[in-house]
Length: 522
Image (tube, rainbow, N blue to C red; front, side, top):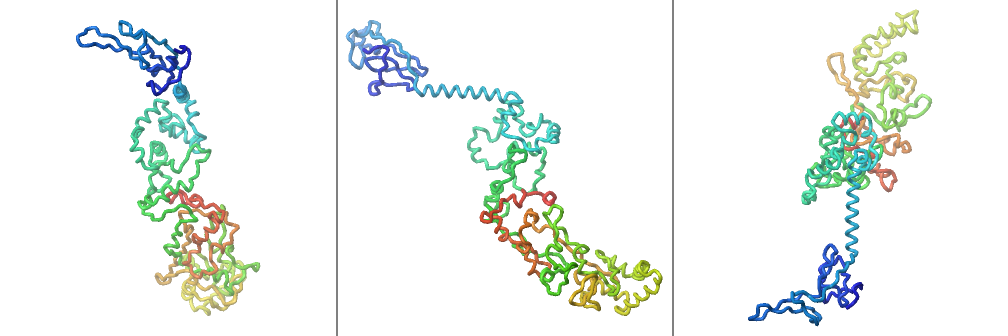
């Protein structure tokens, strides 16, 4: 036999090894004992064999037989049936598997203790769980006051209801969640972006998702709104929009056949083009005539009309101010009705005011004479009225011409401070406006309609496009009808807003997420 302290190698052919975790430390003729260590590393060795009692027919006592595999020992079994060759106990050696299990259990226990320690204390819990700074809106004093009003213990508790109740609250919320932690089938079938309990906390302040249209798809707020990303909530990216708009099944349910991945690739053409919309304004205006007409007069100072003559940016520079007659049109289109009296002009903006003015011409001439010819007011008034009667016949005819005439011919080639190549006294309201006859002596002028936003669901900023010529996007030089909507199509925008053009083309560059009209218009 080998020394009891030697470490014999295990022979898999001759001895079964019931436990692979521990290595037997016995020396039994160069082999480990057949029983080997138990699961806890305790030696199970007793003797080299287990004698078997053999009883022959007619015998009552029988004889014990040695069961050694190498052959019976010389001494044989003891009278009580035990082996005469006991094996001394050894100290089994743990394998790598045992050490790996011990380390794993230790790490799990240490981690659990650390988690309980960090999540048990309210201050430590919030600092440990918080993945980053909260946005400015959700960390303000106003939000804190509202959270306290709603019964929360503070800003964090306003959204993380279970987290404010400590480890037991977190565990209870996890056990009560639907689908549960063990309902793997339901968890797999759960649609992506499905609203969660966190959305319930959001709705305490944002009741009915009041920042979005009621028709917006019902998805979890966290699909687009990422909190704990800094002082401002993370802006929506294309993948957020693509969660719905790049999903053909979702868009089919929403009755929107277009599936959009990127503006430069598959964004549909703008609706005002696909629907062939027309400007509903009844004002008669010809862009081509004003920009390229050979008979157009020069402005004071000798400059020619261009886009900036009428279209001027607002205070922010994002949009253009509405065109106004007094600021942009009157310099050329004078309201002088008497060729010899440039000081007296018709009011603009109300047909009633025009009628009242014409029916009080004697008073208007008298006021003018009082300022410029105070010595002979009566004579001045009589001469002016006589001149008008000689030209137009009567006051009623003058009023009819003022409202309904569209002729540009007249006895004078000069209007106000401008001279034209054709004769042009005041041609009448009908030259530019739609005028309808009403009761005798009255007229109805259709008010002009200036559409401020043709792309109501998109944002545009002229200030960011100052380096682009107006004509590059607005083909005004070839437009002769008011009905023309002088906006560029998608192809013109893609020239710059695309990977090839080098300008951002993200969805959020032009769109907000399904905002209601009253918010989007701000």
